Length: 361
Image 1 (tube, rainbow, N blue to C red):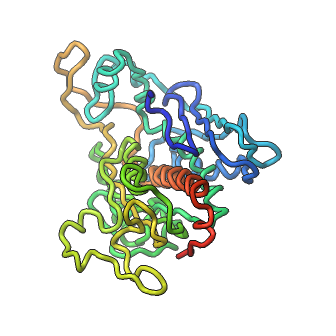
Image 2: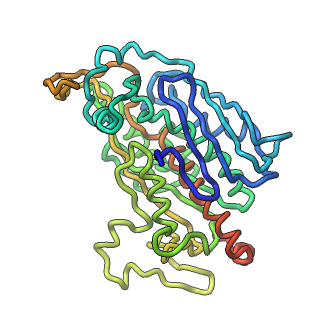
C-alpha cells in the first residue's frame, strides 16, 4: 500500500502533483442513482481554489472538474467515478534555484529519504494542491449524506492567536476567512497583513460541525468513528492535531463535569462531541483541527542541501499566508468521506437502525 487510497466501502484514490499536467481522484463504491453534476463538484472546488482572499496564494487556477466516468445522465452508475482537474497556472521557475535544497518545514527531506527521488516543483505530491482531489471526492460523498439530511460545516475559530468569542453561523459567509465572529474576523485580517509585511505566515484552528448524523455510525475498538475522523483530518498535510468535543479540556475536568446527561429528548450537553464508544450518539459531531503555519516564508532560514552543506534559504514563489480558510473545505471533505463510508457500513450491518435513528439539528 502506497498510502494514496482512503476508505473501505466508499474508497478514493487521489493522484497528481502540484506542477504536473493534472490532478484527480478515482472513487469506488459510490452507490448508483445519486444525483451528481459538474456543478455539485465545482462549487466545492471553488471554495478551495487559490487566488481568493488576503491569506491565499496569487496562483490563479480555475480548477475546472472533468467527470470522466461513473456518471450517466446526471446520476451515478455504481461504477468507479474518475474526476480530473488540470493544472493551468503553473510556474516552476522559482524552484530551479533550490532543487538540491531541503526547505525547512516541508516534506523535501523525508520524501528524498523514502524514495531517493522527489518532484521539487512546488513540493510535488506533498503540496497542498494534492487536496483538490480530496475536495472533489468529498463533494460526491456530500451528495450521499445530503440525501440523509446530514450536513457538514467547517469554520475558522482561531487564526494567528486570535480566537472567536462567539459563533454566529450567518457570519461565516460574510467574510473571507469563514469566521463566525465578525470582530474576530476583522482582527484576523489585520494579523494576516502584519504577517505578510514581515514575510511570515500564520496557523490557526478550524472547527467542523456535523448536524443530523444518526446514532449508530462507527465501529468499536480499532475502527472507532472518532479514530477514523482523526486520521482523516490528520492526513491533511498542514494539520498537526485533532480534538473531538471537549478535547484536551476533558483532561482538566471531573467525571461529573465531563459526562453528558441524557434526557428523554437526547443528550443535554455535548462534551463527548457526538461520539461515545467509537459510535455516533445522535448529537452534533464537533471536531477541531490545529493547522500549522505555511512553511514557505520569505524570511531567511537555515538548512542544508543534498550534499549536507549548510545553506541560507529565502523562498520565492507564490504561497499562502495561511492554509485557512482554503483548508476548511478540505476538512469538510475528509469528514464527509468518513461519514459516507460509515453510513454504507451501517446500512449493510443494521439498516433498520438508520431509519429508526432520530435526527438532531
